[in-house]
Amino acid sequence: MAEQQETHQQWLDQLAAASRTKQETFMKGIANRLGRPSRMTEKPQHPFRGAPDFWNAFEWTIEERVERFTDNFKAVGGHVARLADMDAAKQFIADKAAEMGAKYIVRQDQQELEALGLEAALAEANISVWNTDPGQSWKARAAEADFGIVIADYAAAYTGSITVLSAKEKGRSVSLLPTVLMVIIPLERLKTRLGEILKNFDAAGRENLPAGIHFISGPSRSADIENDLTIGVHGPGIVYALLVG
Image (cartoon, rainbow, N blue to C red; front, side, top):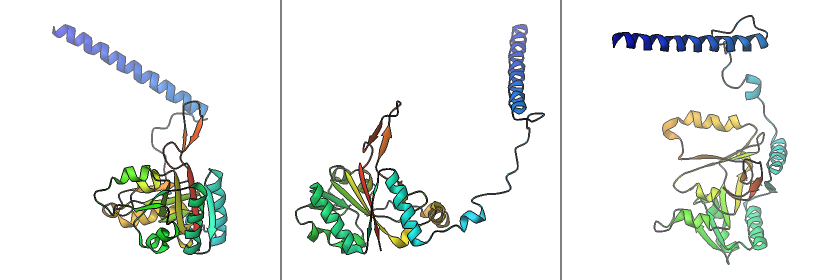
């Protein structure tokens, strides 16, 4: 029995040695193709961490931010409107609701949206305010909504991205489930780079992070294995970014 165990162990050692030889040959082949005399055995040095100084200092003017954000957001199928103030945003939403026949609307429970007075502007629509009725199935209400209305916490012009945070009064379903999403972006929240937004989360610390951080870059886009693109399968098929200010 001992002799059999020793023979088995020798066989395993031979397999391991052969495997290491093949690995070494393979890695040396890669090194040769890269023009190196031998394979690297130590990890390369990384003297820089994070974004370089020139990128951290890079910033567009507000008009450049508006122009770049608009171009980038439209390039992926989104819609952008530049509006003077919140009254203009209210009128824009009311006009689109009338144009599209929107009857069911859900919005976040935020003071800025309360001040809009959408209930008066959309008297014929059924407007629900997220999480205000504990007996309501809010995910179902958001899924059946024609319009979802939120206010962006941030937006990045360079990537054409909108950032929406989740909270008790700001359910993620409001931006993920309705057919049409309306995002109000106060101009002071439109940044040049995504890094300007991300550093706020680092500064807050893990214990102070919101329940969800969502980056929205146009309508939902999905493709199958044959790259057949479909819009609106996993989220709103129509997204309006309303730049206000």
